[in-house]
Length: 134
Image 1 (cartoon, one colour):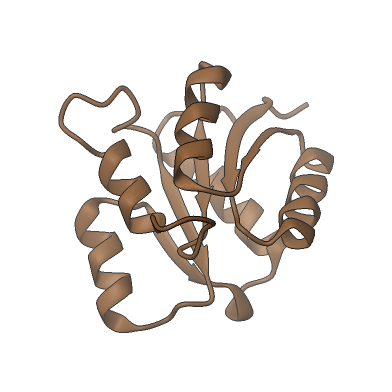
Image 2 (tube, one colour):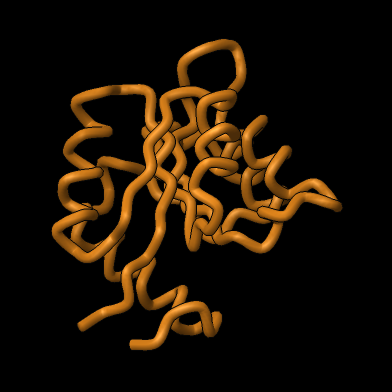
């Protein structure tokens, strides 16, 4: 049996958030959810250990996914090592480059990847980084 992976999913659209959560749970993920940057930061504290973050760019409130990544990747952040997978409809090169510069693990355009493919990719990435035994 695969190791349970603790994942924080940050997505503003509730129906999509629920669909992602359901699919991840069926694939042995323990899922924490948030719809805004403030809620996501609170969930990180509540969860204790998060193995990976699934993040949209557009979120509820004024802050975006870029703001969240900036906070997670700060020098003294206890979450700076957590892999972040950005999954967004925003495909503009400047946004993608901004995320990569901040240190996200991967950037997916929602319409270009199936959920199943992303789940496999997350598991493979965690295994390569020694964060998951396959």
